[in-house]
Image 1 (tube, rainbow, N blue to C red):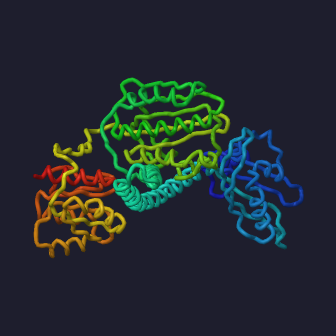
Image 2: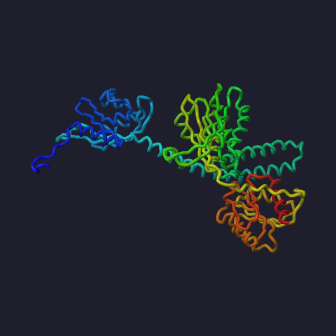
Image 3: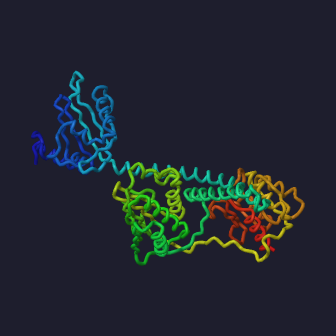
Amino acid sequence: MRHPNVPESRPPLEETVALLEKAQEVAHIGSWVAELDGSDRLGWSRETHRIFGVASGEFVATSEAFFTFVHEDDRDAVRAASRAAITEGHPYDVEHRIVRPDGTVRWVHEQADIARDPQGRALRMVGVVQDITDRRQLEDQFRQAQKMEAIGRLAGGIAHDLNNALTAIAGYAELALGGIPVNHPARADVEEIKHGAERAASVTAQLLAFSRKQLIAPRIFDLNDTVTSIARLLSRLLGANIEVRTALAASLPPITGDPGQVEQAIINLAVNARDAMPDGGRLDLITSLDDLDEAFARAHLPIAPGRYVALRVADTGHGMSRETLARIFEPFFTTKDVGKGTGLGLSMVYGTLKQIGGFVFVDSVLDRGTTFRLYFPPATGQPAESAPTPRSGTDESRRGQETILVAEDESAVRNFVASALRNEGYQLLLTGSAEEAVRAVTAHDGPIDLLLTDAIMPGKSGIELANAMVAERPGLPVIIMSGYTKETLTVSGLTDPVNLLRKPFSPTELRRRIRTALDRRA
């Protein structure tokens, strides 16, 4: 038993230092001391050496040697922070990049305090350093996800408005062609207007794919079958100097989605790979069943841990820089020359995966190729497929005599619908909103045989209007004009799936769909 007047023995200095080094190793925080007496001496703890990737005997212990590890783009900022702490007493609290001897770039967070003599002269700088690379990557991924969501909402809104304009442009062009003789000199110009509108419609379709608001036809299918069939096409599409190879996992679970969109996504990735291999190379399509753990999910937000059907599309091309990788999924971003790409291909891939609940990530190193990793959740049940549009056995061009209520807030589309149906014998009630449509029905003395409404309108939506109309008139045919997904367009009281008319549509398609819906009710 220790005598109360005998001081307790302290551990030797070597043991104290060892315990401190162990504590830093556990916390992943290193320490350092910079002498400010003009000697430029700098001491690093063992954990600091580990963070910087430098063995103890390989570091020249000076502050100037430290700055050789600081990323050249951050060097001036770190020097300025150090000077401000020493001369002005500002806190030294900086985050910056370092470049290890093996070339890897890491992010570190440094904090320090200045030890001063009684006269206030700086004697030494005592600080700590922590590797925050993982945290910065998570923050970057989170910001990127937020940015992509915001861009997606913007792209969806732009595409929706463009589809309204293109509906009128292409529709009026087709109506004009019906009244222009084949040999008329203006006919070729009107045909070009129609073709231009159709080409623009394909761009809006890709924007809607990116924003996950396009129409889809989901079903359960085998990814291996899709990859096998598309690989044969790619062999011809990419050229003889690019070898296409497949490696398919056995007993792969099926997935749910639109096979056509998944095929288009693979084609878009393959075309980009071809452009990255101008002198030839190899494209690998590899499927697998991956179990992703918590660590992978944390490093690849926003994917959740679990089992996924995976497809890797890997090329041996020139790769991409870090700056390019940060923007590749943005609409209209392209590294190709003017006129050689729209910048929508990878955006469509991103949108397709997001819409079916999947994820896409990319790994790329300059001059060492690129790998896109697509993750699909396995199918859990048979999806409700889009019902095929019913086709009438009657003559689709025959005139009608029914009353059609039209609700469309875009005047150009509303007037085009009136022009397309004016000479068909229908009685039209043209309204610009759901509220106006209700007033028109109240004032109308007679039956309403069909509702043709836009899905999205200011105030009450077309979906709400359709719900109210069907509740009052069971069996009322409803056609909804929209470029949005099927899941957002549900009308209670309908025994059949919602009859969607995707914008832009032609006068012929409009007349046929209306006639079919009316004849089906009869």
